[in-house]
Image 1: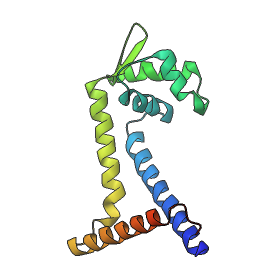
Image 2 (image 1 turned 135 degrees about the horizontal axis):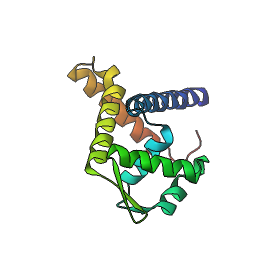
Image 3 (image 1 turned 45 degrees about the vertical axis):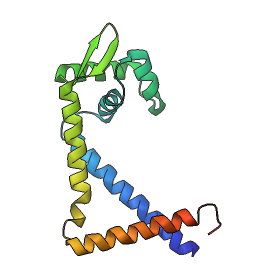
Length: 143
């Protein structure tokens, strides 16, 4: 059982990596660096942030304050963010770009399953529900 569970977990990590690859391919097509996209991502999750708070939320990756300041300038230049008195927020254009990236990421991620017919999708859904329910039932038990 352990080998089977271990293999299943490995496949889950592969799926997660595939989704990450889809996401990277989608946002990188806009020609922005990862740290700049991450700034936009954080801005999309907050109403408005002072620059110090923005940098604090992002500093775990070791990107310097100067680089983040440059990222903000780039996003402002693209019309994806605006800054006023040291407070930065995402614009409607920035929200739209981010929504387009999310939608394209989902399209790319789920493309391999687009060949399934309705019956096969129902089977996959039911099997995944059984798996979820089985995992929840054994939660806390040793496998």
